Amino acid sequence: MDFELSEEQRAIQDTARAFAREEMMPFARQWDEDEYFPVDTLRQAAALGFGGIYVGADVGGSALSRLDATLIFEELAHGCVSTAAYLSIHNMVAWMIDAYGPTELRLRFLPELCSMAQFASYCLTEPDSGSDAASLKTRAVRAKAFISGAGQSDVYLVMARTGPGGPTGISCFLVENGTPGLSFGAQEKKLGWHSQPTAMVIFEQCRVPVANRIGTEGQGFKIAMSGLDGGRLNIAACSLGGAQFCLDRTVAYMKERKQFGRRLADFQALAFRVADYATGLEAARLLLRRAATAVDKRGGDATRLAAMAKRLATDTGFDIVNGCLQLHGGYGYLRDHPIERVLRDLRVHQILEGTNEIMRLIVSRYIFGT
Ligand SMILES: Cc1cc2nc3c(=O)[nH]c(=O)nc-3n(C[C@H](O)[C@H](O)[C@H](O)COP(=O)(O)OP(=O)(O)OC[C@H]3O[C@@H](n4cnc5c(N)ncnc54)[C@H](O)[C@@H]3O)c2cc1C
Image 1 (cartoon, helix red, strand yellow):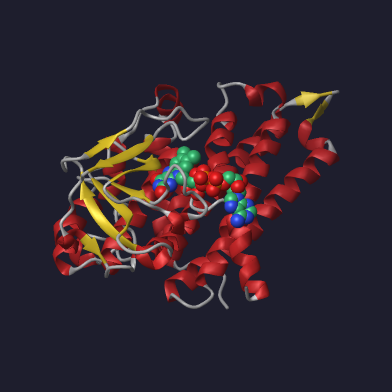
Image 2: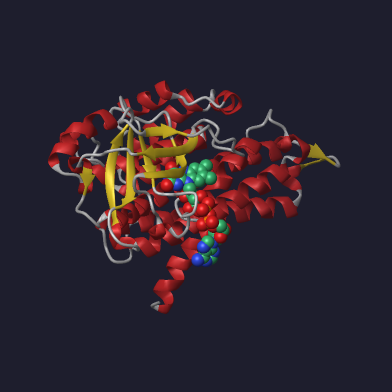
Protein backbone atom coordinates (compact mmCIF):
# COMPACT_ATOMS: atom_id res chain seq x y z
CA MET A 1 0.00 0.00 0.00
CA ASP A 2 1.55 3.28 -1.13
CA PHE A 3 0.07 6.49 0.22
CA GLU A 4 2.35 8.79 -1.78
CA LEU A 5 1.20 10.60 -4.89
CA SER A 6 3.29 9.98 -8.00
CA GLU A 7 5.38 12.73 -9.57
CA GLU A 8 2.79 13.04 -12.35
CA GLN A 9 -0.03 13.39 -9.81
CA ARG A 10 1.88 16.12 -7.99
CA ALA A 11 2.33 17.93 -11.29
CA ILE A 12 -1.44 17.67 -11.99
CA GLN A 13 -2.14 18.99 -8.50
CA ASP A 14 0.31 21.90 -8.99
CA THR A 15 -1.32 22.83 -12.29
CA ALA A 16 -4.81 22.86 -10.75
CA ARG A 17 -3.55 24.77 -7.70
CA ALA A 18 -1.93 27.48 -9.82
CA PHE A 19 -5.03 27.80 -11.99
CA ALA A 20 -7.29 28.07 -8.92
CA ARG A 21 -5.08 30.74 -7.33
CA GLU A 22 -4.63 32.85 -10.46
CA GLU A 23 -7.85 32.42 -12.42
CA MET A 24 -10.53 31.64 -9.84
CA MET A 25 -9.69 32.86 -6.33
CA PRO A 26 -9.43 36.59 -7.19
CA PHE A 27 -12.85 36.55 -8.89
CA ALA A 28 -14.89 34.12 -6.80
CA ARG A 29 -16.39 36.78 -4.56
CA GLN A 30 -17.63 38.81 -7.53
CA TRP A 31 -19.04 35.76 -9.29
CA ASP A 32 -20.96 34.97 -6.11
CA GLU A 33 -22.26 38.53 -5.70
CA ASP A 34 -23.25 38.88 -9.36
CA GLU A 35 -24.48 35.27 -9.78
CA TYR A 36 -22.13 35.14 -12.77
CA PHE A 37 -21.41 31.86 -14.58
CA PRO A 38 -17.73 32.13 -15.61
CA VAL A 39 -17.87 30.52 -19.03
CA ASP A 40 -14.46 31.81 -20.16
CA THR A 41 -12.73 30.57 -17.01
CA LEU A 42 -14.31 27.15 -17.46
CA ARG A 43 -12.99 27.06 -21.04
CA GLN A 44 -9.54 27.99 -19.76
CA ALA A 45 -9.79 25.09 -17.30
CA ALA A 46 -10.75 22.85 -20.22
CA ALA A 47 -7.62 23.98 -22.08
CA LEU A 48 -5.67 22.41 -19.20
CA GLY A 49 -7.52 19.14 -19.72
CA PHE A 50 -10.15 19.59 -16.99
CA GLY A 51 -13.21 19.41 -19.29
CA GLY A 52 -12.96 15.65 -19.83
CA ILE A 53 -10.65 14.51 -17.06
CA TYR A 54 -11.44 10.79 -17.27
CA VAL A 55 -12.64 10.71 -20.87
CA GLY A 56 -10.65 8.84 -23.57
CA ALA A 57 -7.84 10.70 -25.35
CA ASP A 58 -9.22 9.76 -28.80
CA VAL A 59 -12.08 12.26 -28.33
CA GLY A 60 -10.07 15.01 -26.63
CA GLY A 61 -10.22 13.74 -23.05
CA SER A 62 -7.32 13.60 -20.60
CA ALA A 63 -7.69 9.86 -19.83
CA LEU A 64 -6.72 10.41 -16.20
CA SER A 65 -7.89 8.38 -13.21
CA ARG A 66 -10.63 9.12 -10.67
CA LEU A 67 -7.94 9.65 -8.08
CA ASP A 68 -6.32 12.26 -10.35
CA ALA A 69 -9.74 13.93 -10.67
CA THR A 70 -10.14 14.21 -6.89
CA LEU A 71 -6.78 15.98 -6.73
CA ILE A 72 -7.91 18.44 -9.41
CA PHE A 73 -11.31 19.16 -7.85
CA GLU A 74 -9.86 19.61 -4.38
CA GLU A 75 -7.43 22.23 -5.70
CA LEU A 76 -9.99 24.02 -7.89
CA ALA A 77 -12.36 24.28 -4.93
CA HIS A 78 -9.77 26.42 -3.12
CA GLY A 79 -10.43 28.95 -5.87
CA CYS A 80 -14.23 28.71 -6.17
CA VAL A 81 -16.25 25.80 -4.77
CA SER A 82 -19.33 26.52 -6.86
CA THR A 83 -17.50 26.71 -10.19
CA ALA A 84 -15.47 23.59 -9.42
CA ALA A 85 -18.70 21.77 -8.56
CA TYR A 86 -20.30 22.67 -11.90
CA LEU A 87 -17.18 21.37 -13.64
CA SER A 88 -17.62 18.15 -11.70
CA ILE A 89 -21.15 17.70 -13.11
CA HIS A 90 -19.94 18.45 -16.65
CA ASN A 91 -17.23 15.80 -16.26
CA MET A 92 -19.74 13.27 -14.96
CA VAL A 93 -21.89 13.67 -18.07
CA ALA A 94 -18.89 13.53 -20.42
CA TRP A 95 -17.76 10.28 -18.80
CA MET A 96 -21.23 8.73 -19.07
CA ILE A 97 -21.26 9.44 -22.82
CA ASP A 98 -17.72 8.08 -23.14
CA ALA A 99 -18.41 4.91 -21.15
CA TYR A 100 -21.89 4.03 -22.44
CA GLY A 101 -22.49 6.04 -25.62
CA PRO A 102 -22.31 4.56 -29.11
CA THR A 103 -19.32 5.59 -31.25
CA GLU A 104 -21.42 8.04 -33.24
CA LEU A 105 -22.44 9.99 -30.11
CA ARG A 106 -18.95 9.84 -28.60
CA LEU A 107 -17.47 11.38 -31.75
CA ARG A 108 -20.28 13.90 -32.14
CA PHE A 109 -20.38 15.28 -28.60
CA LEU A 110 -17.19 14.55 -26.70
CA PRO A 111 -14.61 16.72 -28.51
CA GLU A 112 -16.74 19.82 -27.90
CA LEU A 113 -17.54 18.81 -24.33
CA CYS A 114 -13.87 18.16 -23.51
CA SER A 115 -12.87 21.59 -24.86
CA MET A 116 -15.98 23.06 -23.21
CA ALA A 117 -17.02 24.65 -26.45
CA GLN A 118 -20.22 23.00 -25.21
CA PHE A 119 -21.44 22.54 -21.63
CA ALA A 120 -23.38 19.61 -20.18
CA SER A 121 -26.05 19.03 -17.53
CA TYR A 122 -27.26 15.90 -15.74
CA CYS A 123 -31.03 15.59 -15.48
CA LEU A 124 -32.29 12.99 -13.02
CA THR A 125 -34.26 14.78 -10.27
CA GLU A 126 -37.96 15.58 -10.79
CA PRO A 127 -40.32 17.68 -8.66
CA ASP A 128 -41.88 14.52 -7.12
CA SER A 129 -38.87 12.23 -7.37
CA GLY A 130 -35.67 13.24 -5.59
CA SER A 131 -34.13 10.63 -3.29
CA ASP A 132 -36.47 8.02 -4.79
CA ALA A 133 -35.03 8.62 -8.26
CA ALA A 134 -36.15 5.24 -9.62
CA SER A 135 -39.75 6.44 -9.43
CA LEU A 136 -39.19 9.16 -12.05
CA LYS A 137 -41.92 9.71 -14.65
CA THR A 138 -40.50 11.95 -17.43
CA ARG A 139 -42.25 11.03 -20.68
CA ALA A 140 -43.91 13.47 -23.07
CA VAL A 141 -44.78 16.44 -20.83
CA ARG A 142 -42.60 16.48 -17.79
CA ALA A 143 -39.96 18.50 -16.02
CA LYS A 144 -36.64 17.90 -14.36
CA ALA A 145 -36.07 19.95 -11.21
CA PHE A 146 -32.94 21.58 -9.76
CA ILE A 147 -30.81 21.08 -12.86
CA SER A 148 -27.33 22.58 -12.57
CA GLY A 149 -26.33 24.47 -15.70
CA ALA A 150 -29.94 24.56 -16.98
CA GLY A 151 -30.39 27.19 -19.68
CA GLN A 152 -26.63 27.60 -20.18
CA SER A 153 -25.74 24.02 -21.06
CA ASP A 154 -25.78 22.82 -24.65
CA VAL A 155 -26.28 19.13 -23.92
CA TYR A 156 -28.71 17.57 -21.40
CA LEU A 157 -28.29 13.97 -20.32
CA VAL A 158 -31.83 12.99 -19.39
CA MET A 159 -33.08 9.93 -17.56
CA ALA A 160 -36.60 9.26 -18.88
CA ARG A 161 -39.21 6.55 -18.46
CA THR A 162 -39.54 4.33 -21.52
CA GLY A 163 -41.00 1.27 -19.83
CA PRO A 164 -42.95 0.10 -16.79
CA GLY A 165 -42.38 1.47 -13.26
CA GLY A 166 -39.15 0.95 -11.36
CA PRO A 167 -35.50 1.27 -12.33
CA THR A 168 -35.56 -1.09 -15.32
CA GLY A 169 -38.09 1.07 -17.19
CA ILE A 170 -35.72 4.04 -17.44
CA SER A 171 -33.51 4.96 -20.41
CA CYS A 172 -30.91 7.66 -20.87
CA PHE A 173 -30.93 10.23 -23.72
CA LEU A 174 -28.95 13.22 -24.89
CA VAL A 175 -31.15 16.23 -25.60
CA GLU A 176 -29.58 19.22 -27.30
CA ASN A 177 -30.47 22.79 -26.43
CA GLY A 178 -32.71 24.11 -29.20
CA THR A 179 -34.64 20.85 -29.58
CA PRO A 180 -38.33 21.80 -30.10
CA GLY A 181 -40.30 21.28 -26.87
CA LEU A 182 -37.28 21.83 -24.59
CA SER A 183 -37.48 24.91 -22.34
CA PHE A 184 -36.27 26.11 -18.96
CA GLY A 185 -37.90 27.44 -15.80
CA ALA A 186 -36.86 30.60 -13.97
CA GLN A 187 -33.47 30.57 -12.33
CA GLU A 188 -33.74 29.32 -8.74
CA LYS A 189 -32.67 31.69 -5.97
CA LYS A 190 -30.23 29.70 -3.85
CA LEU A 191 -28.31 29.95 -0.56
CA GLY A 192 -25.03 29.25 -2.35
CA TRP A 193 -23.60 27.89 -5.63
CA HIS A 194 -24.20 31.35 -7.12
CA SER A 195 -21.62 31.05 -9.88
CA GLN A 196 -23.69 28.42 -11.66
CA PRO A 197 -27.31 28.44 -12.79
CA THR A 198 -29.97 26.05 -11.46
CA ALA A 199 -33.41 25.74 -13.04
CA MET A 200 -36.11 23.36 -14.16
CA VAL A 201 -35.70 21.69 -17.53
CA ILE A 202 -39.12 21.30 -19.17
CA PHE A 203 -40.09 18.85 -21.90
CA GLU A 204 -43.30 19.39 -23.87
CA GLN A 205 -43.75 16.90 -26.69
CA CYS A 206 -39.97 16.98 -27.01
CA ARG A 207 -39.01 14.37 -29.60
CA VAL A 208 -35.58 12.80 -29.25
CA PRO A 209 -34.32 10.31 -31.85
CA VAL A 210 -33.45 6.84 -30.62
CA ALA A 211 -29.95 7.48 -32.01
CA ASN A 212 -29.48 9.88 -29.06
CA ARG A 213 -29.91 7.07 -26.52
CA ILE A 214 -26.95 6.29 -24.25
CA GLY A 215 -26.77 2.58 -23.47
CA THR A 216 -29.58 0.14 -24.14
CA GLU A 217 -33.30 0.61 -23.46
CA GLY A 218 -33.92 0.15 -19.74
CA GLN A 219 -30.27 0.65 -18.81
CA GLY A 220 -30.71 4.35 -17.92
CA PHE A 221 -30.98 4.05 -14.15
CA LYS A 222 -27.87 1.89 -13.94
CA ILE A 223 -25.95 4.41 -16.04
CA ALA A 224 -27.24 7.30 -13.91
CA MET A 225 -26.10 5.57 -10.72
CA SER A 226 -22.68 4.65 -12.09
CA GLY A 227 -22.17 8.28 -13.14
CA LEU A 228 -23.01 9.33 -9.60
CA ASP A 229 -20.31 7.12 -8.05
CA GLY A 230 -17.74 9.34 -9.75
CA GLY A 231 -19.76 12.53 -9.20
CA ARG A 232 -19.85 11.83 -5.47
CA LEU A 233 -16.07 11.55 -5.37
CA ASN A 234 -15.72 14.93 -7.05
CA ILE A 235 -18.27 16.69 -4.86
CA ALA A 236 -16.48 15.21 -1.83
CA ALA A 237 -13.20 16.59 -3.19
CA CYS A 238 -14.79 20.03 -3.63
CA SER A 239 -15.86 19.94 0.04
CA LEU A 240 -12.35 19.06 1.15
CA GLY A 241 -10.84 21.84 -0.97
CA GLY A 242 -13.28 24.42 0.38
CA ALA A 243 -12.65 23.31 3.96
CA GLN A 244 -8.86 23.24 3.56
CA PHE A 245 -8.98 26.75 2.10
CA CYS A 246 -10.91 28.02 5.14
CA LEU A 247 -8.70 26.13 7.57
CA ASP A 248 -5.51 27.60 6.06
CA ARG A 249 -6.93 31.10 6.37
CA THR A 250 -8.07 30.42 9.92
CA VAL A 251 -4.62 29.25 11.02
CA ALA A 252 -3.12 32.47 9.60
CA TYR A 253 -5.82 34.55 11.31
CA MET A 254 -5.28 32.83 14.67
CA LYS A 255 -1.57 33.67 14.53
CA GLU A 256 -2.38 37.36 14.06
CA ARG A 257 -5.54 38.06 16.03
CA LYS A 258 -4.99 38.91 19.70
CA GLN A 259 -7.52 38.99 22.54
CA PHE A 260 -6.81 39.17 26.27
CA GLY A 261 -3.19 39.96 25.32
CA ARG A 262 -2.66 36.60 23.60
CA ARG A 263 -2.88 35.30 20.04
CA LEU A 264 -5.94 33.13 19.39
CA ALA A 265 -3.47 30.36 18.48
CA ASP A 266 -2.22 30.44 22.09
CA PHE A 267 -5.60 29.48 23.56
CA GLN A 268 -5.25 25.74 23.81
CA ALA A 269 -8.98 25.09 23.49
CA LEU A 270 -8.94 26.83 20.10
CA ALA A 271 -5.66 25.25 18.92
CA PHE A 272 -7.03 21.78 19.80
CA ARG A 273 -10.10 22.49 17.67
CA VAL A 274 -7.84 23.26 14.74
CA ALA A 275 -5.89 20.05 15.40
CA ASP A 276 -9.17 18.12 15.21
CA TYR A 277 -10.16 19.87 11.97
CA ALA A 278 -6.82 19.00 10.35
CA THR A 279 -7.21 15.38 11.48
CA GLY A 280 -10.77 15.21 10.15
CA LEU A 281 -9.69 16.52 6.77
CA GLU A 282 -6.81 14.08 6.52
CA ALA A 283 -9.07 11.14 7.40
CA ALA A 284 -11.74 12.15 4.89
CA ARG A 285 -9.09 12.65 2.20
CA LEU A 286 -7.66 9.17 2.79
CA LEU A 287 -11.10 7.57 2.49
CA LEU A 288 -11.81 9.61 -0.63
CA ARG A 289 -8.63 8.42 -2.32
CA ARG A 290 -9.39 4.83 -1.35
CA ALA A 291 -12.90 5.19 -2.82
CA ALA A 292 -11.53 6.81 -5.99
CA THR A 293 -9.21 3.86 -6.48
CA ALA A 294 -12.17 1.49 -6.08
CA VAL A 295 -14.25 3.42 -8.64
CA ASP A 296 -11.30 3.32 -11.05
CA LYS A 297 -11.20 -0.46 -10.72
CA ARG A 298 -15.02 -0.58 -11.10
CA GLY A 299 -15.04 -3.21 -8.37
CA GLY A 300 -17.97 -4.41 -6.27
CA ASP A 301 -17.09 -2.07 -3.38
CA ALA A 302 -17.03 1.13 -5.49
CA THR A 303 -20.58 2.34 -4.73
CA ARG A 304 -20.30 1.63 -0.99
CA LEU A 305 -16.94 3.37 -0.65
CA ALA A 306 -18.00 6.34 -2.81
CA ALA A 307 -21.10 6.79 -0.62
CA MET A 308 -19.01 6.57 2.56
CA ALA A 309 -16.47 9.07 1.22
CA LYS A 310 -19.11 11.53 0.01
CA ARG A 311 -20.94 11.43 3.33
CA LEU A 312 -17.82 11.83 5.43
CA ALA A 313 -16.11 14.51 3.31
CA THR A 314 -19.20 16.69 2.85
CA ASP A 315 -20.27 16.51 6.54
CA THR A 316 -16.71 17.00 7.80
CA GLY A 317 -16.06 19.79 5.31
CA PHE A 318 -19.18 21.72 6.28
CA ASP A 319 -18.54 21.33 10.02
CA ILE A 320 -14.95 22.55 9.62
CA VAL A 321 -15.98 25.61 7.63
CA ASN A 322 -18.63 26.40 10.22
CA GLY A 323 -15.98 26.05 12.95
CA CYS A 324 -13.58 28.28 11.00
CA LEU A 325 -16.30 30.91 10.76
CA GLN A 326 -16.70 30.75 14.55
CA LEU A 327 -12.93 31.17 15.02
CA HIS A 328 -13.10 34.39 13.00
CA GLY A 329 -15.73 35.80 15.38
CA GLY A 330 -17.96 38.48 13.85
CA TYR A 331 -15.57 38.95 10.93
CA GLY A 332 -16.30 35.44 9.73
CA TYR A 333 -19.92 36.42 9.22
CA LEU A 334 -19.08 39.32 6.90
CA ARG A 335 -18.91 39.13 3.14
CA ASP A 336 -15.45 40.77 3.31
CA HIS A 337 -14.13 37.34 4.27
CA PRO A 338 -14.64 34.32 2.01
CA ILE A 339 -15.63 31.92 4.77
CA GLU A 340 -19.35 32.70 4.71
CA ARG A 341 -19.37 32.10 0.93
CA VAL A 342 -17.66 28.74 1.26
CA LEU A 343 -20.10 27.83 4.05
CA ARG A 344 -23.04 28.61 1.75
CA ASP A 345 -21.45 26.73 -1.15
CA LEU A 346 -20.58 23.61 0.86
CA ARG A 347 -24.01 23.27 2.44
CA VAL A 348 -25.61 21.85 -0.69
CA HIS A 349 -23.01 19.08 -0.98
CA GLN A 350 -24.80 17.38 1.92
CA ILE A 351 -27.99 17.40 -0.18
CA LEU A 352 -27.20 16.69 -3.84
CA GLU A 353 -25.81 13.74 -5.77
CA GLY A 354 -27.81 11.75 -3.22
CA THR A 355 -28.46 13.28 0.22
CA ASN A 356 -26.25 12.19 3.09
CA GLU A 357 -29.21 10.23 4.45
CA ILE A 358 -29.27 8.30 1.16
CA MET A 359 -25.49 7.75 1.49
CA ARG A 360 -26.21 6.15 4.88
CA LEU A 361 -28.99 4.09 3.29
CA ILE A 362 -26.56 2.75 0.68
CA VAL A 363 -23.91 1.91 3.26
CA SER A 364 -26.35 0.33 5.70
CA ARG A 365 -27.81 -1.85 2.93
CA TYR A 366 -24.35 -3.25 2.27
CA ILE A 367 -23.81 -3.84 6.00
CA PHE A 368 -27.14 -5.60 6.58
CA GLY A 369 -27.35 -7.21 3.15
CA THR A 370 -30.82 -5.70 2.56
C1 LIG B 1 -28.43 23.55 -5.97
C2 LIG B 1 -28.89 22.19 -6.41
C3 LIG B 1 -28.40 21.65 -7.59
C4 LIG B 1 -28.84 20.40 -8.03
N1 LIG B 1 -28.38 19.91 -9.23
C5 LIG B 1 -28.94 18.77 -9.73
C6 LIG B 1 -28.61 18.34 -11.06
O1 LIG B 1 -27.79 18.97 -11.75
N2 LIG B 1 -29.23 17.24 -11.55
C7 LIG B 1 -30.14 16.53 -10.82
O2 LIG B 1 -30.65 15.53 -11.34
N3 LIG B 1 -30.47 16.91 -9.56
C8 LIG B 1 -29.90 18.02 -9.01
N4 LIG B 1 -30.25 18.44 -7.73
C9 LIG B 1 -31.28 17.70 -7.00
C10 LIG B 1 -30.75 16.92 -5.80
O3 LIG B 1 -30.02 15.81 -6.25
C11 LIG B 1 -31.97 16.54 -4.93
O4 LIG B 1 -32.42 17.75 -4.31
C12 LIG B 1 -31.65 15.49 -3.88
O5 LIG B 1 -31.39 14.24 -4.47
C13 LIG B 1 -32.78 15.31 -2.86
O6 LIG B 1 -34.03 15.17 -3.47
P1 LIG B 1 -35.25 16.09 -2.96
O7 LIG B 1 -34.77 17.50 -2.96
O8 LIG B 1 -36.43 15.76 -3.77
O9 LIG B 1 -35.47 15.68 -1.44
P2 LIG B 1 -36.35 14.44 -0.91
O10 LIG B 1 -35.97 13.21 -1.64
O11 LIG B 1 -37.77 14.83 -0.87
O12 LIG B 1 -35.80 14.31 0.58
C14 LIG B 1 -36.25 15.13 1.68
C15 LIG B 1 -35.53 14.67 2.95
O13 LIG B 1 -35.90 13.31 3.25
C16 LIG B 1 -34.76 12.50 3.34
N5 LIG B 1 -35.08 11.15 2.84
C17 LIG B 1 -35.72 10.83 1.67
N6 LIG B 1 -35.84 9.52 1.55
C18 LIG B 1 -35.25 8.97 2.64
C19 LIG B 1 -35.05 7.64 3.09
N7 LIG B 1 -35.45 6.57 2.38
N8 LIG B 1 -34.41 7.46 4.27
C20 LIG B 1 -33.98 8.51 5.00
N9 LIG B 1 -34.13 9.79 4.61
C21 LIG B 1 -34.76 10.01 3.45
C22 LIG B 1 -33.71 13.20 2.48
O14 LIG B 1 -32.40 12.84 2.84
C23 LIG B 1 -34.00 14.66 2.78
O15 LIG B 1 -33.40 15.03 4.00
C24 LIG B 1 -29.76 19.67 -7.24
C25 LIG B 1 -30.22 20.20 -6.03
C26 LIG B 1 -29.79 21.45 -5.61
C27 LIG B 1 -30.33 22.00 -4.31
